[in-house]
Length: 85
Image (cartoon, rainbow, N blue to C red; front, side):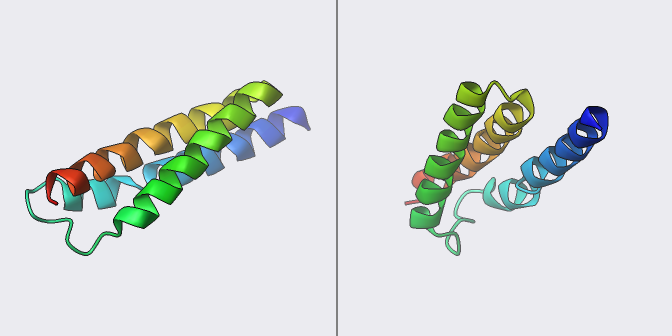
C-alpha cells in the first residue's frame, strides 16, 4: 500500500507542479503579466514555501519536491510580474 500511496503522491505532485508552466510561458514576453495578480503570486509563493517547510519537518520528500518545483515556476512568474511593473 505504501508504494501505491507514493505513486499517487508523485502523480499528484507532477500534475500540480507542472500546471504552472502554461502561466509561465504566457508571462515570459515583456509586458504580458498585466492580468496576473501580484498579491496572488505572493500568497501562493508563501503557501508553497510553508509546504516545503512542512515536507522537510515531516521528512516527506514527495511534498517537499512537489512544492520546490511549484515554487520555482511560481517564482519565475513572480519575477516576470515584478519586471513588468
